[in-house]
Length: 295
Image 1: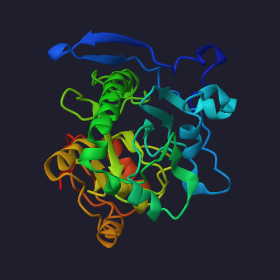
Image 2: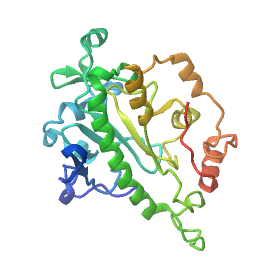
Image 3: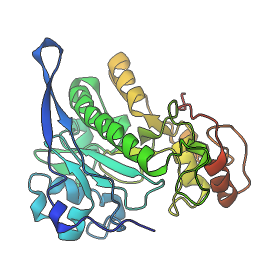
């Protein structure tokens, strides 16, 4: 059963609730205190009939969230000057958010390649579509800020996830929300953050997703493999490539599409499953620790 949408009382809970923590070299970082995860149960709306530009409405109104309709505001988990974080309208796991960087804009030559498509306009520039558009000189520092926010959200959601789903008491009733797969959580990665090599939506967005992959919206091999193969590029890997190479490697679209066609293989133990229903049942009982996929 889906959680009820946030009450009007919590309307401003997704604004910045912050305390400043002193950092080395007298730098300061904002400590994010997000609200509890409460998926409103509504998919993100199409923008002007174009599904691929469905995220744009959140960036266009980022300077004044109150301009959004109440239903769209319900989809916002958190926002600040650097990013907007929304609930994925078709979550592929129990927890699934999309972080949209607000200050990452395309270089002039990239804007020309978009052939006048205004779906990505944010502020004075045009937002990026994928990690292949990133460069160290233009985007690295702003990307790090967005990733820092995402990491704090991951820390917050990990605690919430454990309190909701993880069973440290092996004698707990089988009827509870806890699963055998998360009986031992100390060394288990419960949430990940990363990008799809070939995104399905315009506007660069970072997935923050729990590793249970337990959702009625996860319906086919493409959905599953997009999060369990190297088609899903970890945020740390993107930062590392920008820092070392100055840009992200070229995306081989044919090779990436082939990854989505791979057999349904448990990303923890490697056992191949014949279909999505058997895969989902297996994931709920597979107790192998999750090791993040590395290329």
